[in-house]
Image 1: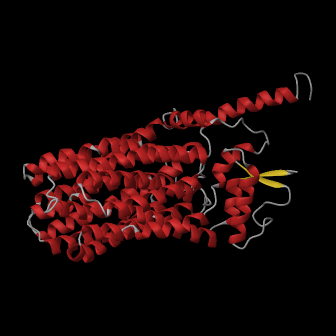
Image 2: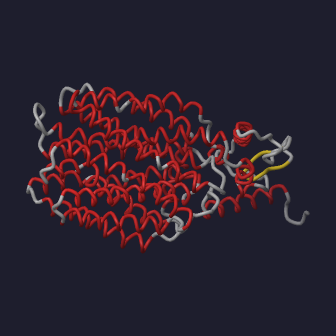
Image 3: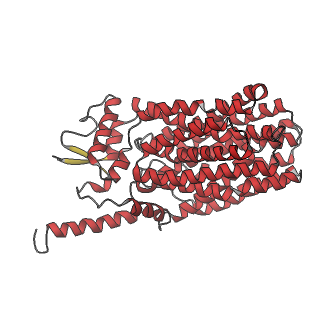
Amino acid sequence: MVTSRVPLDEVLNHIGIGYFHVRLWWICGFGFSAAAVEVVLMSFVFPELARAPWNLSEYQLGAMATCIGCGSIVGTTLFGGLADKYGRRPVFLVTVIIVCIFGLLSAFSTSYIMLIGLRFCVGFGYGGNIAVDFTLYSEFLPTRGRGFAMLLLTFFWPIGQISAAAVAWFIIPSYGWQAFVAACTIPTFITAFARPLIPESPRWLLVQGRFEEATQVCCEIGEANGLSAAEIGLDDGSEVCLDNENTGLEARPLKPDEQQFMSLSILFSPSLWRTTVGLLIFVAALSYTSYGTLTLMPRFLEMRGVSQPDMYRSMLLNSSAQIPGCLITVFAGQYLGRLVPLKVSIFVVGAALCGFALVTEEFHMTLCTMTAACFLEVGYAMYHVYVPEVYPTECRCAATGFLSAAGSLVSMAGPIVSAALIETQRLPTVVMAFASIAMLAVIATSMLLHIETKDRDLADITSTSMLDQKVMQKAMLKQHYPTGTT
């Protein structure tokens, strides 16, 4: 029999951060790193495909990048919604398996069409991975220390990219790009074996009304951290609940189709529409400039006359520059909050790309590209922290998937437009196009993003949903206590 209900945030704060969270950090981080490897590997494969025997044109390479982006769009949209309906954990597992299978198969591609199809499936998988990874991780963290722990997770992205650059430098010149693609699936296979160790998110379980399971998960987390149920505030007969449910009255669970509609409608509710539009513009600009800074950079360096060994060295330096970006993000996130670093990061990326378009010395070009890569990481890292914090549990994965998909959709024109510009051999024009998008995003995000989430408890439902629940609670009270009774 349930004697009392304890808010989840209170229980998580009692649990603190311990062994369970360190293990979770490694598992989620390794998955995040594996996704980074899959995202960046095509930047090393494209120059090889442009040579014999494939001899692909700029338009064919651009079309391939667009198709991979389409796979990511479908994956983030589909898996983000599925994670809100059916749970974070099963989606977490499925996405990794998809990347494993199709990533390995793409190493054996024998034609252009076959390679596009298989890489589309890989994009489909890692799109879902990115939509769920940060969300699941954030929902196990206490308010105190959550921001720092989430920022630490972002270090795995540049580690993945650095690893990909180092492996490409070692494998491609000697063994070819197909051996490189096969080697890049190893981190994903390792992640697939570790993912079953993660339990379901207690926040998601509570939104679904599964109080006993959520309570059991919290007890298991506490036990892993060396704490008893009593020490985390769950005595005999106690259950965890959402902060707004300590009255004991439960709302009617939504059907899957109702939940999907509500998840999408909440994103544009009066309290969140400015945030949603601002983040759409931000992530679209980030995706577009990232394509120019990372994926096309080997091609840009070739156009500037940089040799292949120097190109690999420059790309390794670019990936390494993201480590200082993570350090900047950790410092800024702790002392400046989330919004200021978000807005400044995209500005610096645009300024660095302007510099790359204007300089001629290889040292100066490398300095500009490293600066752009560094602050791209600041932007992505802070974005991945901010989105799970600003959206409620009932639509958190759907929001992450929708934003990523919409941003990719807007930026899908990048490969085709860039291919047309590259054909003109006017490199400054191509790079300035990327820089202009970044500067436009600075103006838009400054006007729209306004909710600071530093040191704020994660929300579980929106104010609109809370109002609906209060109405439901009043109706239930009237049934139990008719007018005129006490």
